[in-house]
Length: 404
Image 1: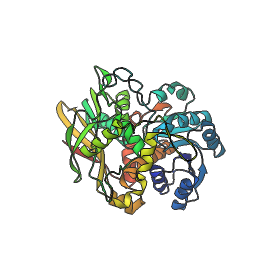
Image 2: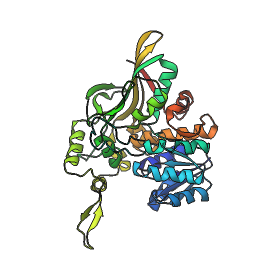
Image 3: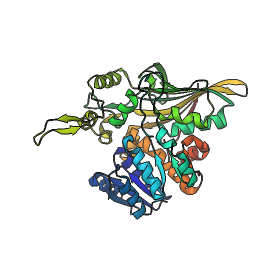
Image 4: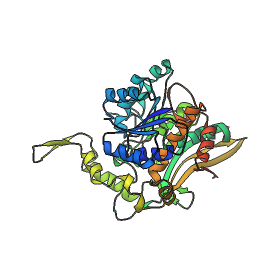
């Protein structure tokens, strides 16, 4: 397998360090808008299978040409969601497979944003599914940790743990702290603003997909491995759009443990218009410069990839499922916990980016060996879960199951 990895930020760098320990691929080309980042990621692994390149993720023709020049079989997208569609289209143009960790962006309903869906996450990709299927090519979308591993858990629950599922709820929480910063998100702030301030989507079998207000339906969820109780709220996320396509459940939600201070900061950004992606004119020495307020916020905050030495605690991604098995009620939480101290010592990567990067590498190995195969635009729950979970454990990253 020959892989083009686009994006050498925190997650992309973690991908290289995880993949370097596995034999399933022949070449991994690491490409980034910043050549120094790509070169640093390649140099750090010291493995001849890795090569650094420069590419603009928004330039479809340049990405397609890079895929062709290196004879890559698959494009792994480790950029933020703005670049999903150009990279998705470039892979199809070049005849390569495609894998991402976040899907094409949504747009709220113009008149009823907190009641009805507008353009949903992934709609632009699924609209092109027939093209991929007709070509016999695979676009595996939403294959990070959430979405990604959380979707694999949902498929595993449906296949092996339940006869009937009432509700699937993705629940994400952590007890991470960062020394020296009042506000320092552990993941890409551009993406965090996008998913947290957009109208959250909920799925109900009788109603379909609908939206609510941001941060709605707060609940306290008890997370495992010493993390403890964390208040979680509704947030827009891909799992709600993916799981119902392949798993039969009467209700699907995603709730994120953000914390009151984080929520208030996001609300303040929104009140000030600093979450906007529409460029505004800013005075500069050479004349006005058009910049996006959200890009300014992102540039003003520390790069999450650099925070590992200052971070303490654990992060947990998981899937809570309620239903029946053999005529009896059952409720479980399937989860994956990463301790930042461990991920820093073992890989030199902070816990959140490492946990995100792990799962696409596992998926690539399953595709390379033929344990997973398919065509079209498919989510993680379209594939058997057991091979993934077994290989995850082989990567020295066990998962857990808690009966509720």
